[in-house]
Length: 267
Image (cartoon, rainbow, N blue to C red):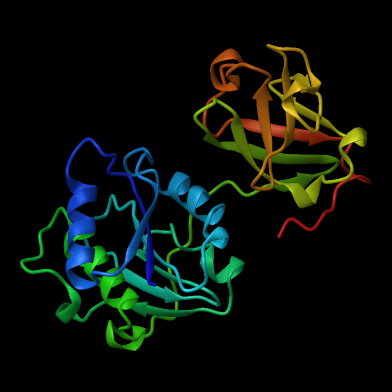
């Protein structure tokens, strides 16, 4: 059974998501469509990339991911279809798919130029309906990627704040807030896992204790821990870290006493 996983910044307030699904179902009637989320803030490419990169590997092999966070809609940016080791990704060439060659290699990248697979007429403002949805549905129904367009050698990188080590300090930033107000950082677990007792996490000078679960600190107290997706997270037990600690996206987080304690390979 073909599966398309859909991620957009459209929300469900308007009909955009429903219309995309309708287009997919007309092309591939037996497809199962799974909503990853439609609550990415408008145009928040980095946020969409984070949600996708932390969820895609849980899906069945050969799932087609249709990704529409596309502030460049109507411009000359490319429409991509990427066959990775286990999945297919269809989305704009704006950096949101740049993690794929790293996390699920090898990949073959195609630029979708064959208008046979587009809905007509093509609007300047809704490529989710007119390009991404039909291409994803055709691929899910068995169309070889070679038919959607030529091979593309390079894709747009994502401009993001990757973690780095400076002296004995590991630096990262807050990249995402979940619905509970937990602040997820760019610091991956492999840089600190097993070393937490030797380290200190700091946010604006405040030292946050490393814990293994939220209730290891009293209700209303802040802490940090490795979340279920493998990143350092700042939380407040039974509270909202975003509001209580007044955290903003992009805010710097540091882990100190790191020279002899963290894995220095940040790749």
